Each structure stands twice: as structure tokens, then as C-alpha cells.
Image (cartoon, rainbow over all chains, first blue to last red; front, side, top):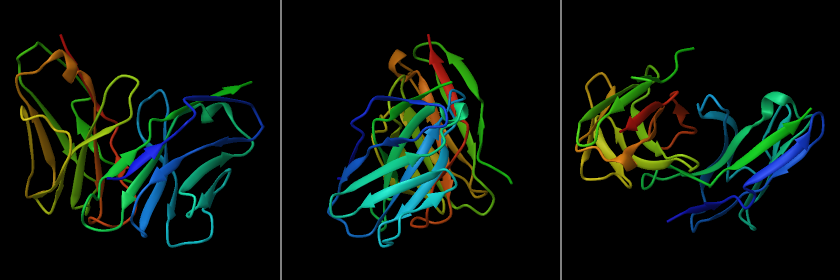
Length: 116
Length: 113
């Protein structure tokens, strides 16, 4: 079974600065998806960014980018020019590429605080 | 764009009562997932359906059951409720079993007194 680990329960960043959230995972599969989801106080899970394991290029979505290291099984999220609205819980998630276990497996989450 | 719709948004029940949560996936999405998120915890997978058939089963108690109907909406039935069932229940949908991300609803918050 796959496991996802987020080693930082809490992080804080000054507004307009950059922060990196860490995620590692364990799998024996070669093809899979990785995601970062954001959960603000409203509690809805919002997709931030996705990465297909077969793609070598790191995904980027505006101020959000990832550093995907497949060999190291690492998938960190970088938030540039942090904004107050970025404050939330961030969950790293893994999804298998095949029929078995196609659900998302989440990490324990990192609470990001943004200081004005 | 249409999103995943969950109802009710909030539900309060007594111990040993029964609760039913509903989920309406994004149009044309044929796969539905249920997750349970306790206070301060990450979401835990309960069960999923693809084309009205159970696809995968996670840590769903025997007191819970679920199904997906012909219009692809899904219902999660919870019986003999316990205090520990108090949680946020998310439904998510996707197009197919293997394609990309899951889209989440806003969740149904169940409180068991």
C-alpha cells in the first residue's frame, strides 16, 4: 500500500515571500499521479496542482510549482509571492495509475500560516 | 462550471440513529468516492463506485453502506451512529477510474450527540 508523509505539521511565511512544503511518498509503482490539495477554513478541498509521474517536467500553476524527484519519491510544493488567502491546510496526495487502489491517499497535512 | 453537490451540509444526530448523505457528481463523471475527515485529521478513504458498481473499499465500518444510482449520484447510509462518527464527509467525483484528479464537494458535517 502507498503511504504519503508530510513532515511539517505547521509552516509560516511572511506575505510576499516564498515557502516550500515537503512531501514524500512510498510506492512500488512506476506510474501514478501526485497532487497538492488546499483546504481553507471553509473546509472544501481545492486542487492546487497535479503531476503525472511519467512527466519529467515539474508542474507549475501561476505562483505554485512543484519539485518532483521521482527517484527520491519526493514531491514538494513551492508557493511564491505568498498571499493571505494562501493560509490553509495543504495536503499532498497520491493516486495510482491502474485500476487497483484508484482512490487518493493523503498525507497528514501541513498548516500554512501567512503573516501580514 | 457545475461542481460536486453534497447534501445536507450539516447534520446533527443522536447516538444509535441513522443518517444518509447524498452526493451528486459533476455531470458526466461516472466515479464517486467517499472520504471521512475527523477533526484535525487527513481525509480517510471509505468507498468508491465506478459505473454504479463498487470499485474499492477502504476503512468503512460495517454499519455504513453506500451505493451509486443510475443517475450516478451516490448515497452513504450510516446506521447505529456513534460519537466517533462525528466528522466531515467528503464526496469526490472523477471521470473514469484512472484519469487525473478528483473533484471534491464542500462536505457534509455530521455531528453525533
